[in-house]
Length: 190
Image (cartoon, rainbow, N blue to C red; front, top):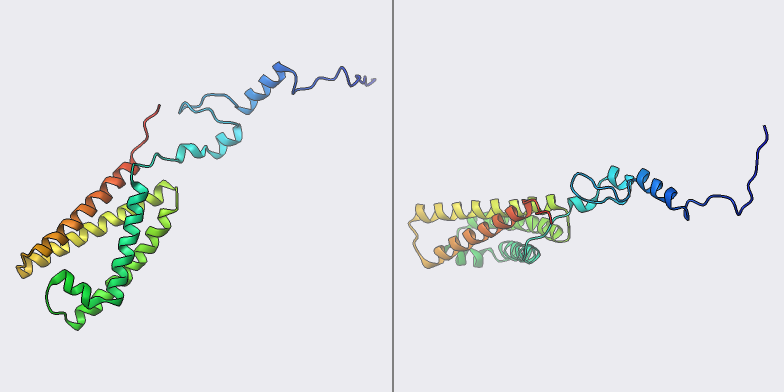
């Protein structure tokens, strides 16, 4: 058997041959429509997953809400740790007890820990992490609302300050729940 060698001018170049390029693109899956209507760039992106499928459309004001939440949790946590008497006087309008101040300092430490999570979630683009932090905020504000309401009912306190505190907890809880639901929605296909 003899091996025939072609001259360099007669060799086939796949880059210049249109049919060969189309076959290669078909094998690689480039330009092939998948089930979601997307066009993956290659079989590798089909196997590894297309990161655009996992990205989400951020609702308007989400990042501002995350920033405001992180600042609020940090500020209240620092106030509760450093100035618990002042914070207790603002919230309850009564004389403070030593045991209450210790509990308020513990609460401040917990709020600072939560604020670290919120600060880190501000810089992420992962949908699951953002959803969990929004759920954390929603649960926190709803529990605080119920605790403040129970204190108001138990002590019979009916002042304008307690109404403002209840309103703030309720509004913040509803806003966090709104963003949680918006982030969890599936985007509409265009």
